Image (cartoon, rainbow, N blue to C red; front, side, top):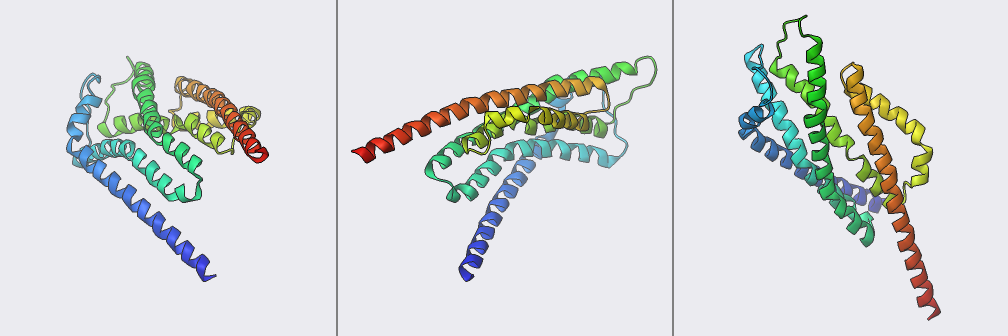
Length: 250
């Protein structure tokens, strides 16, 4: 019983260490982003026609903090993934450690790809559509806080949603998922993806469609990648099994 308690305490201490390292990395990236936040702000609004309004002196600080936080989150992802890997690696066999470590750089790249899709494709389309609805009817004034809050709501979720193919590949490699299960769960998965797209987008049909289609494509890509990983896994396991039989017969 004491040994179990000691092991639990060791695990909690290790988890605490990994969490602290991740938080320190986030703080460092946040401070670094905040130093250059005005330059980042100018780059983000370079295509915006006009100037954004603020309703109080604290608004601009809030906007700068939101921008710095998003950039810090993106930069912290590989650190968080590596610390997670360090925490769970003792429970993995050498092959699983090697495979899981390869996924870490792709976590960051796919997160950036998702944010880029939201920022360069989805955000301009939705903003243009909603702005055109007010032409000739309303005097449009954008506040900096609502503009960037709207931008983050349309971009940040895609950073995480674009991790779906990688997560499916990783779980397939560990034997938790396989393409047959994913294919059988296609209908219920589509339903949940539609619900997610409705929740993360503004309440208009165009926004929903622009989000639903990429999510469904991501799911099908995930199924295809799962099939590739699953076949490769079966081949490698079959080769290993034959090698073991050959060694035993020898």
